[in-house]
Image (cartoon, rainbow, N blue to C red):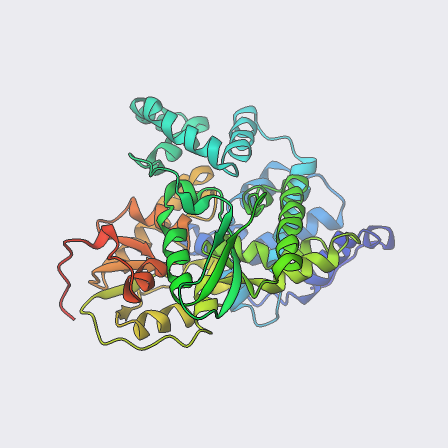
Length: 439
């Protein structure tokens, strides 16, 4: 793609990076076939190629974002399916990141939109506040139908749809501390506690710590860790996101220097994609660039780490698993085979749904802010998952679990919960009383 940025514009490293990304696009349109919003809406401006045109025009002309640009950029899930599909290597992820930051700086959203986004940014990254908000949701639930009829309040109705009826008690595994290996020592790792996940489903990290320690791995839950930064980053709030990034880099570097780390284990794939990008996010910060790059190199999805541990093969268990590959895992981190191979090695029969490359519609806060499109994507995903006739669904991202749970009666668990069970842990509560489907 030909560009016409001035030398003065290119002096800004963010503009220079976006210009280099734009020049790689050859207008081929391969991305449109795998873009969930284009497949759903059929609008060229809701495809990666269309958004690239909008971003180019906005940045090249030094214009503030307008309502049209904001509408179509907001509809992007950042699922990164287009990055997997693109034959030219267009780095759409960092281009859309720049566009969102530019929108945040130059566009004034309607009042209720601003208030909703401010509330999400002030609540979701903080487990204590998030737990309180979920408890308060019970009081607001009777007004959900009314909220759904008022366009500006639809995000609040979507929040109530997603809010669980019961909230697990806080887990002792989320507290800072060290969990010693129960077998011959094989390594030392830190684990990301997370922000929403320990409130919605603390059993995921509990299963991870139990499994790793049984396998001989010391697990550290560091003091002072914060949200990975992805939730506010995808809202274009870069300063707030980078503050979390720097705080986490400091926390994990202390552990590296204190006792060494083989990996930083991440059980929420959306967070994993962000942490693996810390080196890029802080590349212009001389005080943090090297440290952030080291942290990014240490970050591993739990299935990525387990794949290197040479686990024993188990006989078939008679349980059929539909594997839902979270976008942030398959497109963001390019981890596609490890989770399925681990499940098969552990004795599960694995089935893959049709259209596995398409997003379920969760995407951070997308299912709140773009609830109509999200609902269509969820229905499509659930149809494909249910068509596998599996006993259980496995995935690697809490957002996907929360989203899909609201659309199907099939139990859905994190992949590591099934692996913990297979390698000596208790059967997950969601599976008790399960009658295996016919193979």
